[in-house]
Image (cartoon, rainbow, N blue to C red; front, side):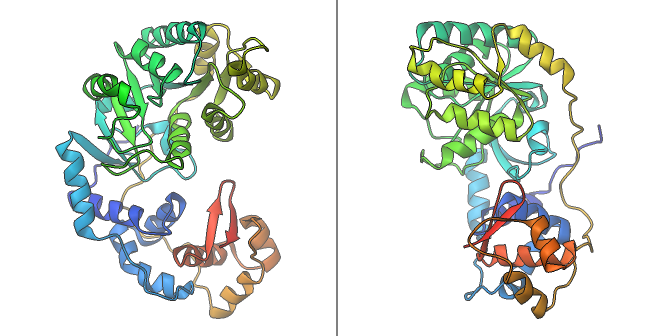
Length: 367
């Protein structure tokens, strides 16, 4: 594993500014840093890129003062913003397509480097579901596996409580300082002291429905496998399982009674190809077969010249192939007969201008 380099204070501020700027998602963030060599250089280039993309008004970059304040607020909470490749950023998450450029973390940062298994499930869990969750989490902890979950009621809480004595990580859909649910205030505090808290949200962020899928994607992304104990058919745990499958993680589901609505989701996962979990040994055997990724650095670097310089004609030509319906980038390259570098450059400009959006699987669509 290569030696890790830390961002300087100024680089960290620029990373946060770029990541918080409108229309700059994780994929665009990475493309910009790779193209220009640093977040600071990318910020300087944003006005011209957005103009080329057709943005009517000048782009507003996230202010430096607000980024400095956000970092200061985190530090005042004994939390830190860590970038991909730095200590405290989970290595498996680093390799997820569209991983957050920065995470706000608090607690034992060394836990982020441990092998991790996600455990999720119903908030209104059954007594047997809670008991089985504690058994799984206890055994994983005894085998020096970090247990990751979402600090929700029910299964999440049982997983954290059982693994707290060794290593547990709570991924939040809120700011690092916001307690949710309120009854988990003590557990939140204990994990901050003895485990690891992780979020991509700014300090002070209250829970919103749209933040929970993003949290679930981090749970699955940082884990080598995901276990679903109980889940109804419309459960957020099934979203976590879907993310895990898309990310190439093993998905385990605990079977349950067909008469219990809390088992409908897990039984459906098994029918759809998830592995049946009847013993924690099933998971441990899976972990032995999964190769741990190398923690490559994605920090400041030399600029790349791989992006072609498109002409105005190229931009209009590519736009004619785009529509509100999602189109795969490979199809755009093939049908437009433009080079991959030119297409990537034009899409970058259009996204910064807010004219296209990216989705999973390399697809783009007009806004």
